[in-house]
Image (tube, rainbow, N blue to C red):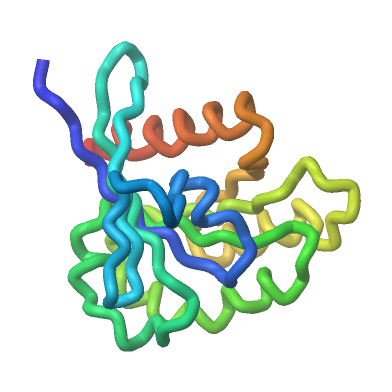
Length: 166
């Protein structure tokens, strides 16, 4: 059986859960903390009894997204946009990313509405669904701290990508 490799590009405002989603820890030697502003981590995940190597490319918010080499996005199978459902500004930030994302309309793009387990959500699911419908994105409600939700969502993303033969 041949190994599958999937590359995911993570982007969103600081504090939306990108690092936690990708299990990026600054003291983990398996991670490559790149001075260009992209953190890279690879992990193995089992999906439908098949081993899949997932590489996460997470943009560091201290750099300007438009200055990033397109190669990180181009080598990714999908783009994961993150927003914190309890922080309106994290959702509004997504609008500033749309011009960049339109350049990569061949990529599958997911909106990860993170922190769905919080009681103080200010962004409605309807608003997220409408945003995704308008932009041809896929919405996934997530909690990095509830492993059953997180694992289900990784499987959802992999299912979408495998269906598209990525």
